[in-house]
Length: 148
Image 1 (cartoon, one colour):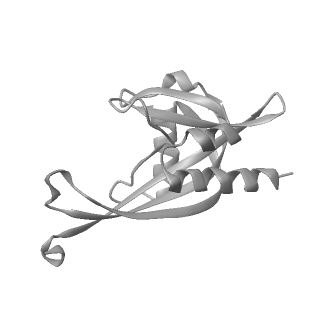
Image 2 (image 1 turned 90 degrees about the horizontal axis):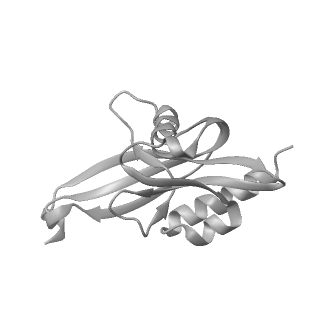
């Protein structure tokens, strides 16, 4: 019975980090070690006592190897999943922020990531594995287009 399964809330944060290069807008995408077929946005768990914004910046730095500044929140993706073995149900919230690249190199990512790369934002939309992250990239593209 579903209601007997313990539920835990998980909160993560990440970013759509962008740069303008040769007249086009690029965002940083990553592939996680062991899941090389899946492109995603850099994100990770908000640690105890850490603000979601700080976690998002830290995860972008660790996973994509770059430094960025937050311009604005984009939105929160919410979903449910079961832990390995199905013993715990998780209610997950992922806060995404629009970030402007300031420095660093995508080759400087941490050991959890097999590759990080800059991808033109419309192409990134077709590469992203998750619908929620495709939506974040689309919203980010609209926000970036409205920037001066």
